[in-house]
Image (cartoon, rainbow, N blue to C red; front, side, top):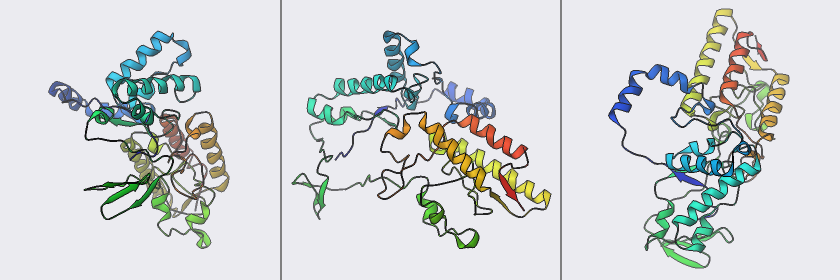
Length: 328
């Protein structure tokens, strides 16, 4: 049952070469350190290109997309430096994937339904193993619910488009309240009893994605306003935990007991996050990056693009005695 087609690229999972594993483990600390300096904190033999698509000929662009398709994984989006900045470059990559779908799926109408129309990458890109080929199987049928939705759930299964489907198991893929939902389900209260839900009623507002004005000693891990979901999350979590640990140690040494974001610093940071997002194609999709999957949620692009510069900013703030924070 499909509501909205999304792009998926081959995972290309294969058994690992023991020599490759040994080589990585022999240099593991340095390997991890190098990853933390990469764009999005991803380490790979297929690095992200920084060159705009328009600087290549059509044949070279095609070859670059083919190479990354065969390599597999999320590195497909790194084919050109402007794939998520320039609509023309993105259109070419999106049509490339649609061509791949048409080349695999034998039924033309099914291939059409499986072909996304939105910008590639502005929703979370999926990786798969033989996903599109699955629809060539005689025991698989695609039920499109984009127009009418699900009519109802019955004891026997699902009714969609007026047709009943008997099911042994039903898997709900209904999305999740990303980046803010978990925090807002906790009754977090700051100064003067203000709730976090009230403070974020017009969308999440943070300083560095780490702190919220009016909520002393509340630290967020990969919260809105930080690179978080657009990075290797393990690296981002470690960076936040290490920064917070250093901050707490600083407070202890200086005899301070509270720290919170200054409102002016928070507002400037929110403006920065929005300005960065507005230079990209990310806000052009109804994705969970903007909270579009949650009815009533304020639409705002929540993560910050650019991991290494973000780390440098956090380090700079700490080096300047936690600039933008009020310590008391």
